[in-house]
Amino acid sequence: MIWTILLAAGRGTRLASATGGMAKQFLDWRDRPLYWESVRSLARCARMGGLVLVFPEEVLEAEKTRVARLMQAESPGLAWRVVSGGALRQDSVRSGLEALPRDCRQVLVHDAARPFASPLLVNRILDAMERQQASGIAGGVIPGVAVTDTIKIIRDGCVAETPDRAALAAVQTPQGFDRRTLQQAHARAVEEGWVVTDDASLLERTGSPVWVVEGEPGNRKITSPEDLEMLQEKRIPEPCVGYGYDVHRYAQDGAASRQPARPMRLGGVLIPDAPEVLAHSDGDVLLHALMDALLGCIGGGDIGLLFPDSDPAFENMNSAVLLDEVLGRVRSAGVRISHVDLTVVAQIPRIAPHRDAIRKNVARLLGMDGTRINMKATTEEGLGFTGERLGIKAIALVSALR
Image (cartoon, rainbow, N blue to C red; front, side, top):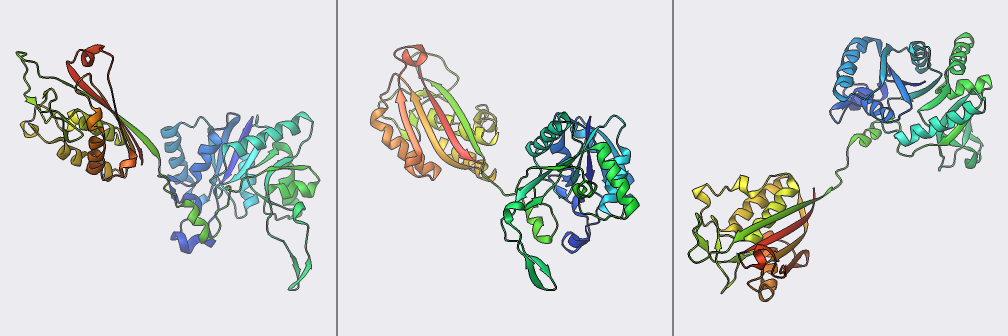
């Protein structure tokens, strides 16, 4: 069984002035403490059995309560324990090792100050640990990234040596270990007074092999105030699509209807010598489909909810006025329309003579370049209610960026 020790026991003194004294692992990130981002990533690895979270002793009980609440809310599927850390990082790791269940054979050690380690990286480490175990090797696996700067070894203020960059790597966490081997290394560190900056250093001193796998440039550690910029989420526009469909019946001589007949308008353009349509508003089937598509981009329901035909206020209402209301909602939602594709389906009238005027008027109503509006028309070869000249329908597809 594999468990992870998540180290969140640091005091964050180097960042105190930038965080108001709050330790970085407790900073708010997506409505959760920052350390929870690591919990989420680890939970996405199917081989992960459990988690030991290590906190400063003075906040242990408060964080234990918070972890219990978060575990219940998100159900990450991990067994978990909470323990207090020590003065040094290696003291906190040793506390975490003592809290592991007896059947845990391999362990990852991860810094909560590296919240963006991906599940892909974790699985890469676990794969290498499995290969080690299969070959009978009891050691460690660490992620490393190539060093791009030239490194100088300085003695007494002067350059003493320039090591070959090809032999250097910047080491990250999580680091994976045979649990027994790591515990023995920590015990020896206590006996001999070793102080190290990572657990792999302990194995190196004892002669146990440590393998290196490819790390991730994005798996940076939050150390200085400048690093806090990593917590400023970049707002990348997200594509969204809305679909709209509407139908209106033609007025028939002698046919009873609760709705009055209106002159046909398509995209705000009056279509002369066309059948009248039955509608509560002005009956612009194309703008109605367009409005539904726009509302689809923002999850805003449909025009039947906003402008019900039971409301006298909308009787014979110009659909362009209703479109302005919908566009206001779209803008308020932070959505920018990028393209509109419109289709009118009718046996009569012929739409082709009016196609360009409709396209230009829709572009005007939307405040968009006409090249971003596509307008087409088709018949249904005499089939269905449109083919029988009983009515007209329109389809709208809106592409946008949220």
